[in-house]
Length: 173
Picture 1: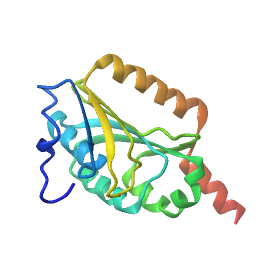
Picture 2: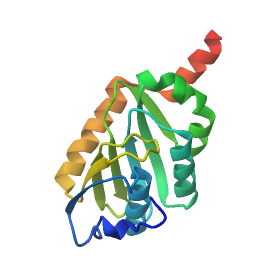
Picture 3: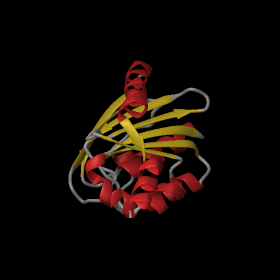
């Protein structure tokens, strides 16, 4: 997020607005995750993206270090494997469970330990850019449950754990 911008310029508190959206180049999905965790407290996070950058991983590192994330599950695309493998050591330090699949979705699901849940459908990869991005944010439990079931299916039936892939590449070299 730009230093001269407050997230409140774009988003209302989750407790007062169950569905909201934005279209801007001032917010990053990491800003949105941080904002959600500030409101929900300790939570479990599922995130999907085509790719991830080192800059975004640094943001996740500090979010994770804050103690507000109990578990983090990440799904990235197979086509970004070379870039992902270069960041593997860092990803492994920050994110508990990373998977590779044929994935182009950009979802963020957050569920607090008390059961509150937030779904974010966004256009942004887990990279930093100054491009206009959009997102729809909802606290609707039906939307969350539907997307969570679909991510679980993607992870269980259509993905490879990054650690397994990395191990195979090391053995091949």
